[in-house]
Length: 432
Image 1 (cartoon, rainbow, N blue to C red):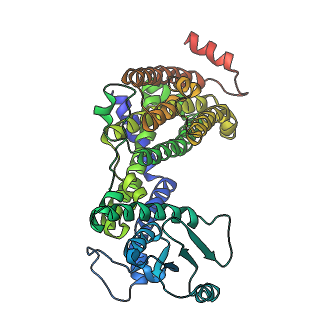
Image 2: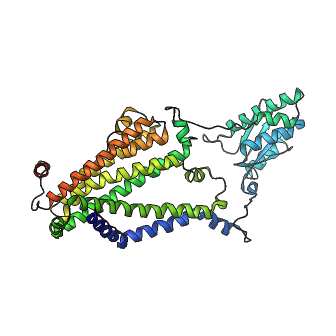
Image 3: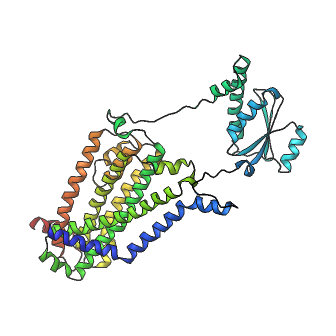
């Protein structure tokens, strides 16, 4: 244990003093800080007067929107009609009632005083006017929704219901929550199923794992190969156990990676908290920073185990390289294996089917399960026993591959000259 601690401290100190490691970390922190502060920066440039950052910033959004004219012959229901159309188009248009003639409305459209106009022929028909029709124009569809609301509201009013009650009935807010029910315990454990948030978390976890494994895995193999080429490994092997050396190197790289990720995501959380009032009700940002604690635990477990299993393999491969220049070639098959797992998971996510047969199989294969199983947990419902089996297989594989990598590391000291074949390595490991 003492040997492991010494090697772990030495390797961790190497990463923390590495200028590239520190530079990349600082760059990412500054970048995240700038991104999370964009709304505040934009508000400073857009506002003529300084405002208290804790005060809610209120904008008159209608001044920046294009004008949509609305003409109706049913003047007694003009408030209902305006309310319905404003509700459908408030994010895109400044809806204005008009009693001008049709030629005058058309002239305003041609002179860009208004972008478009709806002329209601009754409660169930209308005409739409715009300068240049487009196949991407969805205004008619939205207007149909508004007209249905108008018809329903007026029908209720004519039956004796007040305008306020009619609008409340038509525009009643429906709350909804989504739960996974694939397992009895799942609703209790995961709670509300935030599909948007879970989708974002899955993307973040997969890309972070992808970058960390390729970056730190290569660093582990390069460090091992450097020690071998300098003959330092021969001295190290005689003074420390191979398992202590391999586990110390890999866990140090893992810890360094987590320090970097903690700095990046910690700065994101910090600057989001500082600028939260400027982000407003941004659904994507809110989902991103409201991760379920249970899902966060799963993310950390699969992230750590996934990193370790590949880092041990990169370390073992690095010990068999005869020259530092051979590292990229030697690690290419392992890199391809990880890329294949990455492509399988991303393809399943984009197709909308994360519970297909291939993903289920990949959920129990150690090289693919960190991404595949977490994706299934986040994007669907997985029985608890499948998660437990997947984690157990991963833990066993990490320990087994770690011990095997240590043996390959010890044997690799003696393998100089030409690049050894896999059969020769396995034979030497077996004898060792």
